[in-house]
Length: 194
Image (cartoon, rainbow, N blue to C red; front, side):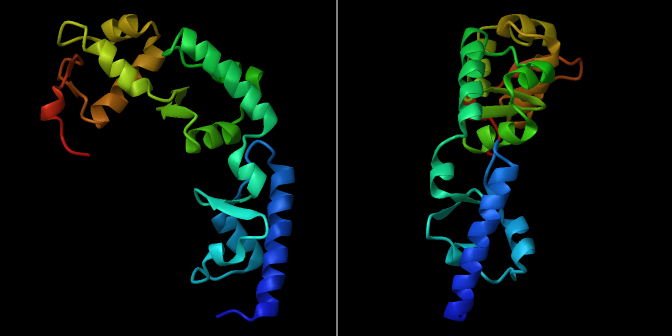
């Protein structure tokens, strides 16, 4: 139970905090829940959803102004379009940090794009969504077992990308790493349950 007047004050204060955070973080304008609680001195027992409304929405542990929760910030959207165009031409050529910087994609904006499922993070790299499934399909055409170099050639990428991609496939049970470093694609029916 929260006093109605105090709840109204908290809603106004939360709106102000969301606005302040959005102004300081245009690449990802959503105020994280823990920071909202800290700034307003709110206990864990009070659900933040009780204070949203009036144009505020909660998405993936962050509070946004309603328009910001649905649309990407314009510069992030434009950069994403350019990145996806490059990844369409070469799906496994993950951009370097320098290339991401040139596009204007900060760590904060990349995190937003991964959370909203516009990109897939594979180790330290960012690829188009579905990259692991596409890699699995291509690796299925290789003679088994295969090396990291053979994987890199099949995916038209570098070892810099192939190694973390294979590690992600290993972790997902899609591939099995042998003691000599080669991998074998596991048949779908023999994979461990996630």
